[in-house]
Length: 325
Image 1 (cartoon, rainbow, N blue to C red):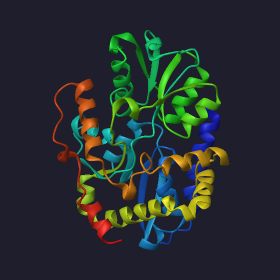
Image 2 (image 1 turned 120 degrees about the vertical axis):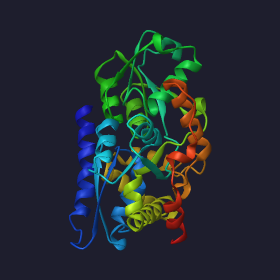
Image 3 (image 1 turned 30 degrees about the horizontal axis):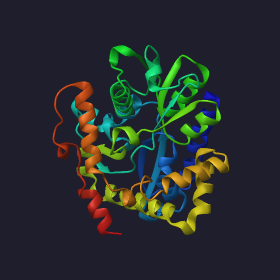
């Protein structure tokens, strides 16, 4: 299973590389890091449909093995933009003291709680090991919140960090003591096909949630506003193209090629990302109410009180991008 996920990650790298290799010398080069998954459809579309290229951008997309690698690379300037759970940006600002800003939204995470087949209820996770990307960011907090709402507290279970979603799925498939994890599609779909049990959408338990966001160093954004605006315009144009029903078949093929998915799974993913209520946020709108929930969860499990949401966000580039479309 892990090998299959590695192949999928490689396929996405090759998908981007094939387009990136045709970049013109005069194009502005950007390096962007993402977690592999269907949430990247706007970027896949912006590449394949030429929306980056027509704005003079050559975007090299890297696949993140873990949030730690992603955050460190952004802080060190290895990549200029990351698309990840917005709480990773909050952690960079509050814990690592790196001045970052979220510049666009994305989705509500599409996350599901997936467990081993012998788990009959969330209460059965008492005394078990749950696996996460990093123990103190993002979707780990979603998992802790679900467990807490079902009467399980930190000393009632063990937590193991294994990295990105494809690694969590591989860990659950290979190790039956890895009792539960938060997974998003296509990995949650692949998990069920592998015999694991889907306990339902995370959103049904935790409420509104701002998940994937585009994040950059504040100083880089301030120094390169025109480049950032062009990138956001291409991303939004890719998103609009992907959500347009007339492009459905080509968008599904883009998921098949970009994520090395079976066409049936790609079709299921497309239905999720285009859902009018829970799909990809229209035009990448940032969900402020969902972000307040992100900050609440961080404060609840890391201590302290939620800080003002405005300190982590600068949507001026996003508004300028929209105005120019």
